[in-house]
Image 1 (cartoon, rainbow, N blue to C red):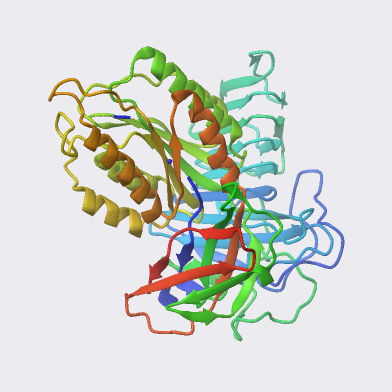
Image 2: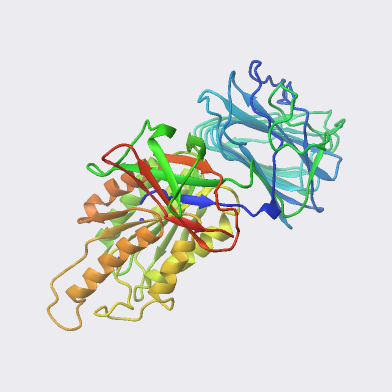
Length: 551
């Protein structure tokens, strides 16, 4: 019946789909200043980014490293500007990725400046007919004007919405620990933490949620039916140095257009490697390493490391929990352990929860909302049916890929004893997906799989009991799955130790280093490239996947 370490994750992006983001680095001046209505910050780069979108476009904006300002305008395209908040901030790689799909535009800030005190602020201008989802961690969200629908969510940042009067909008606002300030004639409930109102026919939709921040709803007569007057194209903010950075197109203009299917990144020929470093004596993460501590080999040939940083980008995590055959007392302990995982995870990490026995069940979709996660964890219960662990992993991989179509790092954390019904000596029907095929999918997964093996072995008194050999095979397969998934295998002898194991996984997530290099072998032939990383510390070992396919 009844997951554990970041991968040596190598991403090589197809040259046909990758463009260079014209982000030239940090300004040398003081931090960007924001006006009383959180308008555009002062100081700009000479390059802007314009993205053509269809009518009623869906736009997802995520910035875990600063604030987001959204403005609604008359134009039919989306524009993006960015500024660096802080003095002397610099980047080893561009922090912004824009992915334009047929029906979804994704704008993501994926890393913070080297200067830990610096941040990145986004200003995004959106057509009035857009449907937008905006997410931040500690940064604020400001929106001026009304979209067809808007969902504004922050972990601890403030949220401000400036609306036109008369209104024609359905509004829902909730803050767990903050307050709501509103110029609307609508009552607050739940001690000032909730506002729910509809004006007119409610043709437009506005949803606002923050755990710790304040929510402000203001009326602004200068907003013209959700279409503020905006002059000129946007500009990408940052450095005052007007010289072009490496990789900037020579014929770039003030508004660089990005077509459907484009993914903007810096230096498309670089291979990025995310890995964790563990002390083999203590099995704990090693901090404080520098670039000189690492050597990287591809197919046995040492590569020149061009970039190095401690990865601060957040994760999308799926907690995959085996509840087959569990008693109510056991499920109670599983709930408590899962709650510990939710509480220990970084605020910027999104979490989804799937339980399984005979079939997988989505307990919670991937979300930043910790209160929702706590409620869903407390609803976990036993499930009938024979254990189908491999089908559950297949479902989780598919679910993760469908729900996280962005640039976040991804991980699955699986808790089980590995006893799929397909193992000889285990009674009942097993997974439809053969173990070997599932293992192949895990190897190709562009993320990491952690496995937490829970010891449920008991003495077999008759042939219908699970046999000792089956427990051994479940144990070995859980180890093999973690290795194939670039993760770490955790052995949990007692259910009471599960919460501690989950906390170790979360701690491991915070000990990730990022390396980047330009492979000496340029051919994109789809073949396997073996990657090996060594360190100059005797007890340190790099853990993760062992290579990539050069597609």
